[in-house]
Image 1 (tube, rainbow, N blue to C red):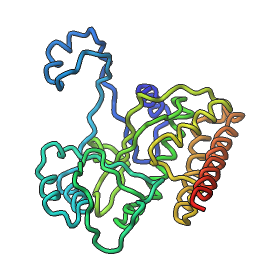
Image 2: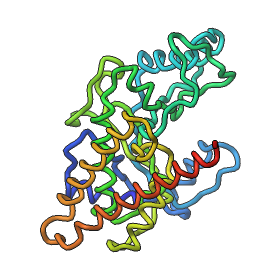
Image 3: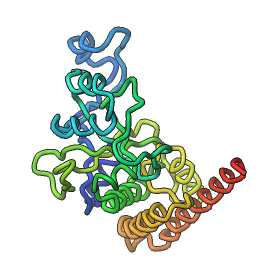
Image 4: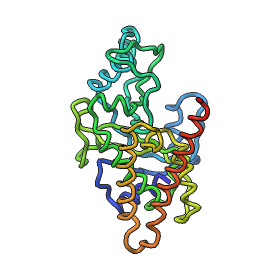
Length: 280
């Protein structure tokens, strides 16, 4: 599935700052490579079929330290520990455009964390807004990525992940901000993806995967004005990207992108209704 996404991006180059780890080679469980490399893995690992791919650059310490201070405010011992912990050296940021923190506080918050790790740290949309990050640009990039996976690679995008991290050398375009400096959006973890048919059955499969995933994408039906605005932008970019990727040769399939958006919105309304019924 990973290779399909890479090939799809080669055929339909993204206009947004998107990066997909390059695939170097497929290593079989019987490959002699394991003879010298298996001892470097943690105890209990055995040889298995695996894909060797490009390593995503880690977020620089100068930036990850700011993230630690954001999450661990008021907990100086934990903050100091994470800053020097070698296990927290590889920082990647998971942008959750479809979720806000349940408990938001004004001003400097007192951290309730007793443990905190920089590996795959979540950054919620309200935090991104406070930090001045361009959530609309992120939404546009995710929309193009989703269209690329559905109509280019023809997979359901189940359980894929997005992270904000530095770009590979000489990669353009990029995002830039005062907080994160130069960065791009990486897509990874395609192990749980499954093929889809480009028909209404595939639409249902893609809709299920959309909600099964962590809340990376903006979501409709939250009732929050800023979230609805972000969803509208995401929807527009997704439909535009879908038509570009499908191309004129598949003009008769364009309606499927609209159908998928409709199903996602229907599911969003249903979930909000169930949530309101549960709190009434």
